[in-house]
Image (tube, rainbow, N blue to C red):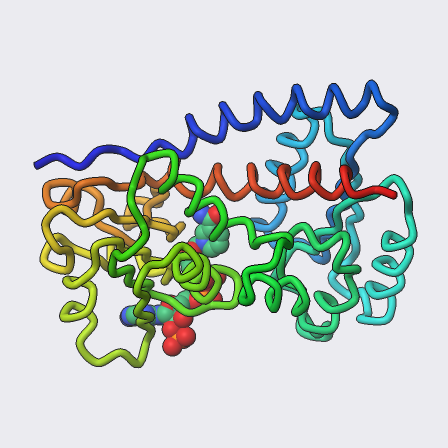
Length: 282
Ligand code: NDP
């Protein structure tokens, strides 16, 4: 068996092309969706992510504003920027790129963003609504994974989904979204004693750990759908996932590549949330 490739890059491109049309129509009605991105400090990876988010906004016709703050910024200063953006009628979405320098509480920052502009879906109100199944901004990476499964016609209802990783931004919410789609969900993490015994039971396996090529073919049930969220560098400095692609390709029925799988979907869902937010302008 050779796994069918779940092409996030292609799906993202087609969704972004649709969005561009929606944004053009909105603009003709006088509404230009606006996203503010706050970057604190000079973390290289964060700078790359932020640039790529801005480029995608530009392409879609979304107005984007970058606030670049020094690594010495205090929590009070950052909160005051957020309060200002919360009041700004041209801004529909506010994103604070994580991680933040040590002197700033990530939770305080996330909670300061108005839930109406929480396009990352990290605010406790957004998370609560996601859990109860109410309409809200869904966190982008988990939402992108669900969209990728849908586009690949993968049945989720009744399937055993195993999520490896339990971070607040990926592992926990993707498990919740799979549960909302009626999967039976098992979470694994660093204290799970026999990881393989559990991953091998998965019909849908989502891996969000951050260890290059952790998952091998022996960890995967033949025919499983495997979603690789990881973004790591291998021994040659090449971008790779948490799943050993060449190995697992021979057992999985569907598999996401890295790069070109989950990553492009994350940005796409961010753009979608920003457009949705603009539509809610009163
Ligand atoms: P975190 O470091 O926040 O979480 C990692 C999770 O993996 C933790 O829950 C941890 O368990 C678990 N874990 C660590 N080691 C093991 C192990 N040996 N076996 C099983 N579980 C383990 O990472 P994130 O969730 O933020 O990100 C995960 C990966 O996804 C990273 O590579 C990141 O770069 C990538 N990523 C990709 C995105 C995209 O758009 N493609 C977006 C966001 C992240 P414990 O809780 O017990 O510590």
